[in-house]
Figure 1 (spheres, one colour):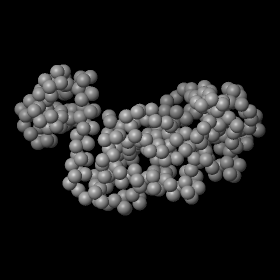
Figure 2 (cartoon, one colour):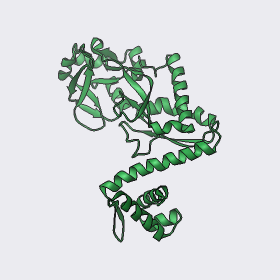
Figure 3 (cartoon, one colour):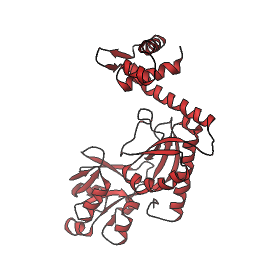
Figure 4 (cartoon, one colour):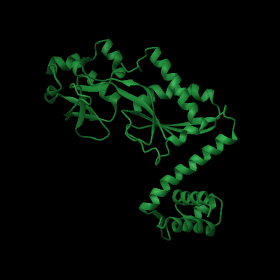
Length: 306
């Protein structure tokens, strides 16, 4: 059995929804596709697909193989590209994920020059405020806020982000000014998270990890831009990266609170799978982003973390 060919047939069948559609797309015969998938099931000793007359369904083992096979086939394509093409002219498509705000304000503007510099490359930029599954979602590079949790990934630090708490002078005139993190329990807090409900804000307490305060916000949103607008209008206290509100702090529309209790800066990191390091297109993007980020910090623009 040609395992790569069998995995390709299996992945195509899952994505197209039927063996006959997979056969047409490959192209191959229906008999050949069926035999390849049966050979995979025999090789691994488990059922991969549940087949009916109308559709295919993955078993639990089949889902594991599907996710890994997609990654393996993608790596093989990258190896072929690396060996057959001019390394000075990388080509192909790069899938990048980033938190929404950083992606819009920082990453997206940098892509114009990158695409101009590498005319044979294309970029998919996915803006999501969650940690993506890089294998399952076929993401080549992910920009994440926070420390590395998945030891299987490689991290390249870009900068530090300082999270701060702030509110408008109008809000503080009406509700007072919190002096300690515990005072937040008596205030209107504006919460950013992936899903509605309470959140935890971290503050310094002399320990290495700091102290978490549970926040029950009166207003929840999954958009930091919208929360900052609400804070400017006096809706409550917001927790954001300092660079996002630099202009509001400078002109007095927002006031920085609990400065003595601010946690240590949080790293902003570029994550990738070790197997991607050999890809010319991935190396080109990583080198470009690190180069441009260095210029941003050197110019002391609002994107710096301080």
